[in-house]
Image (cartoon, rainbow, N blue to C red):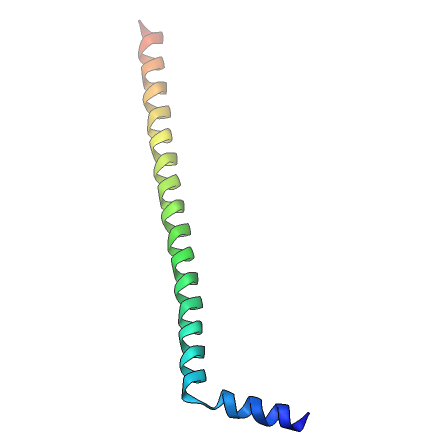
Length: 70
């Protein structure tokens, strides 16, 4: 068991292992950022749709008021 631990420590201390771990960590971070940005963009898109719908509701209400006066 101590040989396995020593071998792991040797590998974990190598420059190649450290580079791979940094690259893996950066890839996870980049993926999380991309997902977060996509969620933000989607939320902004639907907020725009909701605002458009509200404007259309207001216009419809105004038209109904105008028609009811005639």
